[in-house]
Image (cartoon, rainbow, N blue to C red; front, side, top):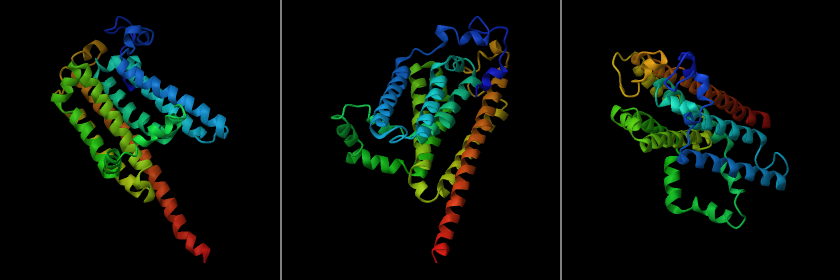
Length: 298
């Protein structure tokens, strides 16, 4: 998970101490309210909503225990990626930056989608507010936009565009220079990943027994793997500013870029492959059940 730590020296760092000291040093933790506020508001809403639901419907009803586990697991991964010294390190080491991105897109996002926290959070609001907030999602403009984006093809395309666009040298350099651009990069990665996983796990693809989900996961693993391969084998530096401090962590700039490419290529590819195989298994099992049902009924 924290693959970047495996390649770093333990005798010193740009922060004036070993890597472990980063976790005990205040400045290495994120203090940006644009990150902290949404994270903690979502946690408070989900916690209050869960308590109210279980108090009303019974423990484990309304929102299931495994959904609660998925939410808090996904939330914790998200918080570690965005608030912990991993984010601070990602501004100085390309490998750590890539680990942070993959935690957002291939670990936190699917866990949060599996939790389906929206209805639970709605229960955290006062009773008079719930119908009003719920009605926002049924507005014609939002409904039309949602129906067009939630298809597996559209969600896969948007997620792919976000990934490749932010890795273009011009935009990536802007991220390194502008904190707002960096925040927008992470926001677009997370939102597009949430949309992608929702379309595959809860959207129209689910009604077709996950066959389309398997296809789009395979395509996503191909194009993200390709980007990782290109970063790994490239003989030139793509983002000189990103790898400028690599020597402080015992790496050459090109080694830092290569390790970042490997993180995108191998661990992320394994997650996509595992998810695709799981959906393929569900697809085969459901297809077998549908085939056997008429014969059994006869």
